[in-house]
Image (cartoon, rainbow, N blue to C red; front, side, top):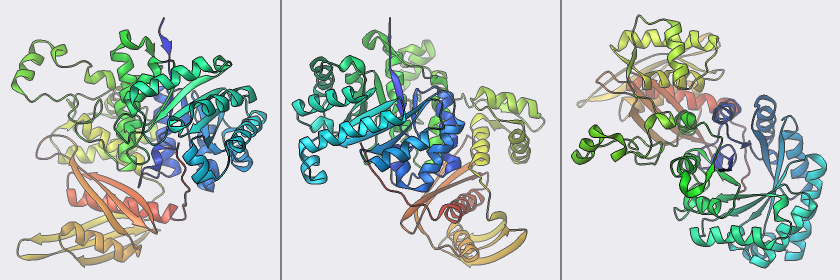
Length: 511
């Protein structure tokens, strides 16, 4: 019988620590719902002690999400643990995840303590956590560079103190698959009480081996894998959840292991995280990249036409990638729209359907054909909006090879109409400068990206921007058949986030 591997998703904690990937509460809830729909086992919702915003986000997710365990991170400090336990206490399955470094370089250079002091801190942290919650995970930060005998000693001690899950991180992506698998095997074999805890791994991708190390650990007895959607995270990122899950599904004869993840929800989750963070997978990214199921070479196309399995080891529909087929027209009704969105993996309530339907009708007037990706863009835009401080009324612009680009922008705020004009290096720059004049928010444009949502000359353009304000990056996005309008929407979306969440400050800690 296949072993069950628990999927511990840390997109909302470690993943959010990618530079510029910070999400507000509404966005975190959207991701949490996507993860719950996928049936992941554990959602690490945040790091409560770092800020009031993070505490509230964990608390809200714990209250609202049902199904997965809701975990949060805490250093091995009493205040951290108490804050963490309080935030997750609203969940029906709360977990405190506490940690301390165990490698000599961290103990001596960062913590400036002795091994004995670290051992005492770890045991006391687990004991305190167990007084507050029943489910306690302990992580040995930088485990892959730790002395094996000390690692064995501290893991045995924290299990005795009440830890129910032991996490062995490859914090700096240093390990090789063979040695990391051996580490898990030898720890489980060498610790007398190892059977009393679930063994977990958390691998980083500095050498591109996070998934390989995680899979090696599974082969050697790991029962939980910590990972993120699209592999986002600190530095080079974490192990990509979609790659681990699909590797187990595609090669059951190798791993004799399975997960509870509904793989048909992978694409929606990937798209949601990419849209909210502004960090999109590269085209050749496995499983969810734009080219993951594309076949251009003639010999490949010939084989595909004869038998799909000649060049595909999994089907696009297995991970929920839409066929991009023509689905709806201008005469389609609300019921048809709701049914198609449901087939694409979105459970949209009636109130939202009505608003999406109005946008759909406006789009149908501009486009002759509507594709699945067009619908997904409409949904993304709807869920991207919060209580807007500024909304776009209209834009007018002029540009040419022998004309200085200029733009007039009209925004609405508190039922007031505000207008400004500006010139720029191009029409997009002119629009952005006009918006700056109205909002008076000083920012630096870090990134601007545009892509076609679907096919055809009348395809929708999807624009994402990243603005830096007071040292913090904010992502914005917008879509339209007019790329200048899409640019204005994305820029204004980021400005609204700055105005709504500009006081956000975050600490960072990584496993």
